[in-house]
Image (tube, rainbow, N blue to C red; front, top):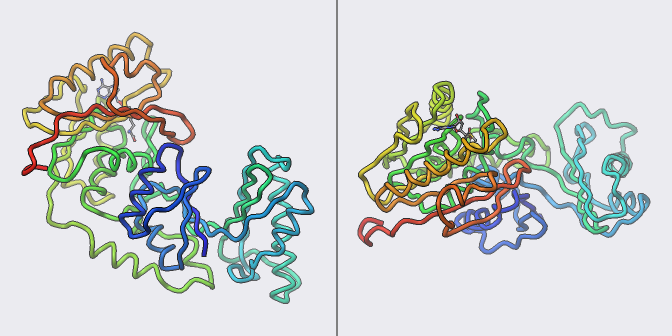
Length: 375
Ligand SMILES: C[S@@+](CC[C@H](N)C(=O)[O-])C[C@H]1O[C@@H](n2cnc3c(N)ncnc32)[C@H](O)[C@@H]1O
């Protein structure tokens, strides 16, 4: 099957590295989606192991469509009966960009009609009761080309299951994982998130450093499809086999809000990594460390609630704190336009990274590399 993995803008390189590590080679990325091929075992592995992909989709077909008739005919020609049953609960999801068929809802309606007509004919039934397993059909129109997909994940892959309580402006788990994966953080190094909020960054960093598959404990839509063999167990077993149970991490997480720290601690427990993270309630300005070669990885505030002066001095003090740490590296994600200037210098690495459709800068300041023997 042709598979597509939608990825947040800015996280493509990280997901490609994750795919390479899972043995899928160099997969091409196009229009915010990474393409590869695989069977249901691969679908199970990708859903369980990928840290920063948003979903795993099966691409049923791609064809040109500038009229609703062309969209209907193209959709009806695809083998939906190989995946869906007379009871499938068909849900439509769509987007259109630079296409004459710009009315996404109407396009979804046309595709659904084509699917229903095809299923009635091929399955020999008069009606579809839609009382069974969910199947989310994606209709993506890009420059007058329609791509129709089936979503094997169901809930987005950022929904790991550990984050059940809300605190201010939480970061998407998939984005936090891409930040950790793109940084120089590895097991054994000191680590600190001094603006930890609900705990997403230290939790994802711990999952990453211990090679714990982020979605081994959750369910996916494809497991309820009649066409899918029972392959999730194998992927979960592989996840059990490869996780590092020996290493003890040295992660530090703090926040100025006591409520945030208690939520983060609770989430870390639910994610099974609480023993690796020391939590503390403190202003970030109070942090110090004599240990060299650590990593700061954070998502400081940048919303409207802080006044410009306060925001500028917060980033200025964060930069000063960073420069007081011996050979540390610092990475932060922020939507504050003056972040780099306030922090006190041009970042060594800088790229745009989207957190739930908000364009942010992901800045990296690199400390010296540790001697070869300590790397
Ligand atoms: C954008 S949120 C972090 C969200 C977090 N990454 C998550 O996923 O939940 C910024 C956090 O910085 C905290 N904060 C604000 N000023 C601070 C300071 N001076 N020292 C430490 N934490 C601070 C806020 O309480 C808030 O939780």
